[in-house]
Length: 209
Image 1: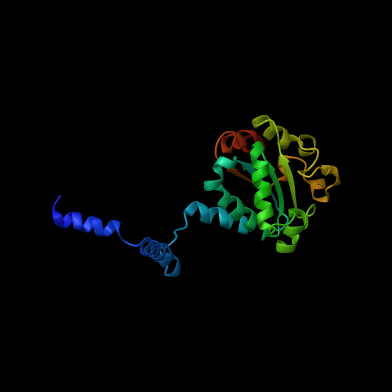
Image 2: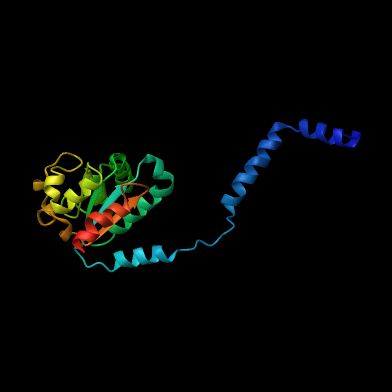
């Protein structure tokens, strides 16, 4: 190493740390204050899903199943929020469940976030004008995996006697006419493993198409 190189390294080592922190702040804040503006592409699959929901007739029943755990949240939680936001923004009847046990807790988190931190049963109505029990319902975890999917399709009231908060399904007005898979117009599975979409196809689409 030459004397000149040693001098350069010595100078770098002796730079005031406040200058280093200032440079780091500039490097972090600059893209935030002046974004590069990279284009965000929308996939064909996303467009198809969006348009399908947009074209559902008013009053259509959509069942959303949270089929992932906390480990899947970095990838799927934005999807959870986006799907629920879209569904709540439309004149639809939304039934929310979870085949994965942790999925019910993820769903609760998403609902609470959309409700601006309030109890979803009242907060969702304030934000979206959707009344709990009439426009949407959260049934929580459906045990049994693929067997639970089949049981839910055959008789929801038997498979899930009460909602996430313990209210009997028979006391929820919206569920009076939603009893089997044949009463559901669209099933959305947000999943990261098994059981997930293949099992839903086997237990619902193959049976009730």
